[in-house]
Amino acid sequence: MDESPLRCLLIARQGPEDREERIQDHLLELAELARSCGFEVQSRRVLKRPQIAPKTFYGSGQLEALADEASRHGVRHLICDDELTGSQVNAIEKLTGLICLDRTGLILSIFEQRAQTREAKAQVELARCEYELPRLKGAWTHLERQGGGVGLRGGPGETQIEVDRRMVRTRISQLKRELGHLEQVRKTQRDGRPKGLPRVALVGYTNAGKTSLLKALTGEGEPRDLLFATLDTTTRKAWLGQDFNPETEEGSLEAKPTYKHCLVADTVGFIRKLPHQLVAAFRSTLGEVRTADALLVVADAAHPDLEDHLKVVGATLREIGCEPEGVEAQPRLLVLNQVDRLHRPQKLDLTKRHPGAVQSCATEGLGVEEIRTWLRELIPGPAKPRELEAWELPEATSAS
Ligand SMILES: Nc1nc2c(ncn2[C@@H]2O[C@H](COP(=O)(O)OP(=O)(O)OP(=O)(O)O)[C@@H](O)[C@H]2O)c(=O)[nH]1
Ligand SMILES: [Mg+2]
Image (cartoon, rainbow, N blue to C red; front, side, top):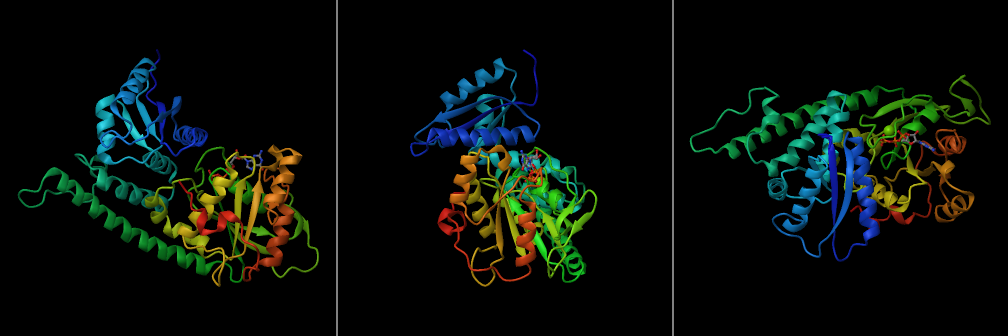
């Protein structure tokens, strides 16, 4: 058996209330996350467990069977869809001899791989520190790599774990200070951008096509078939005239729009159970969304879990302070992207379910003109009264 250090097994618990189909969908998404992190998925397993085993979460019998399977296939990693405590991860690792990652740990690893800018790196490290703090089990090697004068042993009687906790807390304060400073820089940049140009943010579930839409609207952007390809907010200028071809820069303006251009910001995607540490750490980046004059909410219309994705987006938007109604509400347009992957009856069904949405294919430029028209007519300005969709309402908080 050829041994690959990055081969993994994926597991998720099915409780008495859970439909197996739903758990399978969650495992499929976990497989996408694992792939985006560089893993090769050996197999996926739904573990039926009416009750959580407090020590190992999944129970030792099922875990031992998994350990056997893992050793037969040269698998070294076990990735769990459920959120585990630090001591459960330790117990699972001890029992199976595998390296165990939970969903949050996996998402953090992807963010760590993708972070490019100083701000993104600091945001991800802050989230990592917050995540690890309650999970510390020994030496905090991660911080030793930072250098930086932290980590000296304190007074007599301070145990290793206490030293580690103190080191992490010190690092958290350093990072928060650094991020506070970078947030100021970002605000100054925002204030210094061309005055009067409306700002629009692309938001939505990861891999929906936000960057592709940025490209369709502005001619710039590098879409990739990976979860969380985009971490840093990119802002580009879009022409709002009709029939504009970003390749040739030729276009015509019909009527006289108030604005010929707007600024479009591409942002980090959302996902079910987006670690709250990351949402908190990305506060400043997500400030671009909160302060935008309008939101283009992009969704992959061909995804079987479209409606669940929308609920997650609605809940995450509220979590970062974007309410769908009220004086502060921003105009929102739902963009149902990737409709080229749907048949006509499916598109008609979508029209019925989401009558106010634009159906688009960002890669072909379909629907982009409709988006431009909406932008020309609506921004900047208050949100027009409209009937809210179910996914925007607070009851839809099934972000789990
Ligand atoms: N068929 C089809 N594919 C599309 C469409 N829009 C985007 N894609 C593909 O979907 C994948 C993801 O596109 P991105 O634009 O990178 O998606 P994103 O929302 O920016 O993703 P993250 O930044 O990772 O959250 C890429 O492979 C795109 O080529 C579309 O309208 N139709
Ligand atoms: Mg992107």
